[in-house]
Length: 212
Image (tube, rainbow, N blue to C red; front, side, top):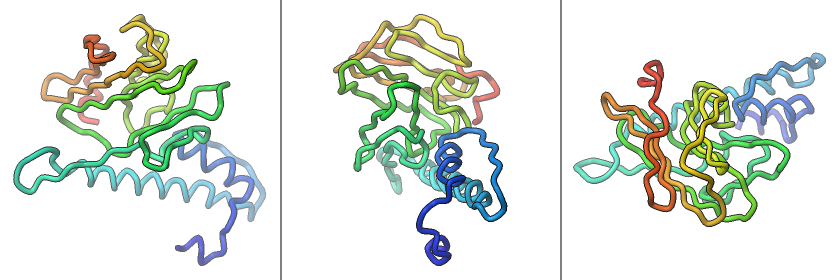
C-alpha cells in the first residue's frame, strides 16, 4: 500500500538487480548514485523476509493432525524465498529452473522446529538434475554447499558444507524421493526414501543446529 501511494510502479535498476538476490538469500553490496533507490533495494526485501519468517513461525505453532483445537498447516513452495530463475506453478506444488547454466533453489513455505516431518518430490521431466533436502532459514539456496543445509542429488551424492559423498544411488525421471527430518529429542537426523525404499540415515544434525 505504501509503495502504491508513493507511485512506485516499476523498480529502479539497482532495485531490479538487488531485490531478487536478497530474497534468494544472497549477500549483496551495491553502489549507486543518490536518488537511485538504494534504500528501497535493501529495505523492501528485508521487510518481506521478516514478514515471511514471522508468518511461518505463527503457522508452525499450530499442532498438526487430530486432537482438540488442532489445525493443519498447508505447505507449498514459497514464491518469496527462491532464486530468480525458479518458476513456480500457481498452486505452489511444482517448480523448475529457467536457467540450465547454474543451480537455482527454492524453499517451502513453513518452518519446522521439532517433531518428525517428511515431504516427497516426483521428478516429472527427463534429463533433469536436482538436489533435495533440508536447510535452515539462513542457509544458501544451493543445498549442501554450506554448513546450514543438507542435500541429496540426482547423481547419487549427499552433500553438506561443500562435501559430497556417495549415498542412495542416482535418481531421475519418474522417481519419487522422500525427504525426512527427525527433530525428536535426542535424534536430529536427515534421511531419504527412493520410490518407497528407505535409504538410511544420511546426516546427523550438528549440536549447534538442534535448536535452530
